[in-house]
Image 1 (tube, rainbow, N blue to C red):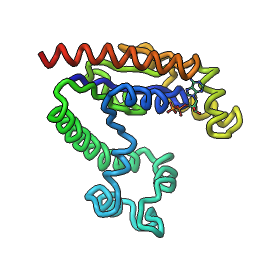
Image 2: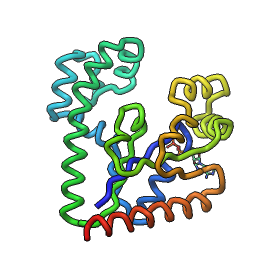
Image 3: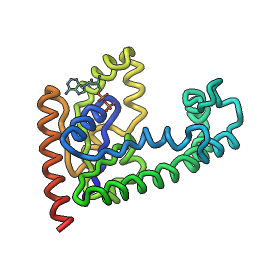
Image 4: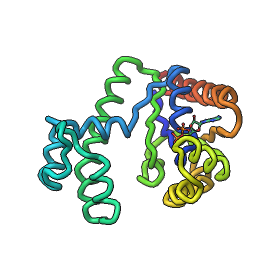
Length: 205
Ligand code: ADP
């Protein structure tokens, strides 16, 4: 088995590459999806959030109002830290369970930890490989504006709120350049998968 991290900047193409890696045969563990699952109604994460933030962050259907929660923590670092302290350990625990299950089923699996803020969260040093999906910032801006239907200042503000993509690229052990066609990127993702698969097979020997 080998565990590689997958990250990028907003609209650099992480979701696109994640799909290509999955199609190539990688087992993707999606941190955003897990972060939603561990706070679904009926979970201990849900109860903990409700206890701290109160009923005002619950939607009529019983789910957590993620937009509202996002607004609350946006300008309140203490509340953000409290929310992270609830959600983060649950995500780590669930990810570990999923990795254990994958390894039991497939000893030489290629596991991809898909984590938007992998580098910011300090996870890079614990992973054997860190894949960064890279595009130059001008293309990142253009794709973000197109995907989300927002104007240039709004897109730029979102890009500027993150670690620059050039910085992330420096911390990668593997870079997938996503500035070409989707087909170019599919091939690049396949090559990365094959590299990881070889390492995984060696590790299992
Ligand atoms: P992320 O998950 O990093 O935020 P996405 O995978 O959603 O980024 O990609 C951002 C946008 O760019 C999407 O609209 C996607 O369809 C488009 N896109 C991704 N890769 C390419 C590519 N190689 N060529 C053209 N458009 C792309």
